[in-house]
Image (cartoon, rainbow, N blue to C red):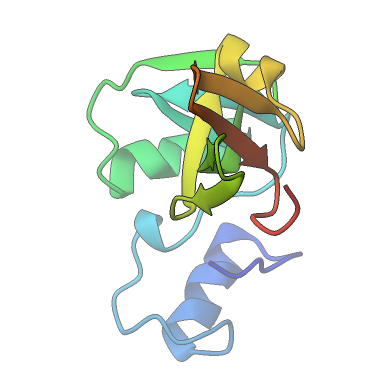
Length: 143
């Protein structure tokens, strides 16, 4: 969606219809736009993390984009969820050979997100012949 400023709802409908605000087709509905502004907050909507959302945008998402008729909305602190890249590092102790798994990108929320940081490693297995750790990266390049 594009942001169009300084227009009344009537002016916006007219410019959407004639194409001067962008080409959205010939039908203009309340799902083509919402009023920006208002207090921004973060929340979980049916378990999906939404950051810097306003009540108007939340209403548009609920009414027009399949979030559901009565979604569960829980306000949470911003930064409650965050994406991290992770991989598994395997060290074979007798030869000091190291292999890495493929890199995945996962979203972590709540208390788990608070414990993660760039370079964090969690030991998954440590025995006589191998050490397996899970490594975390914020960008997928720096480990």
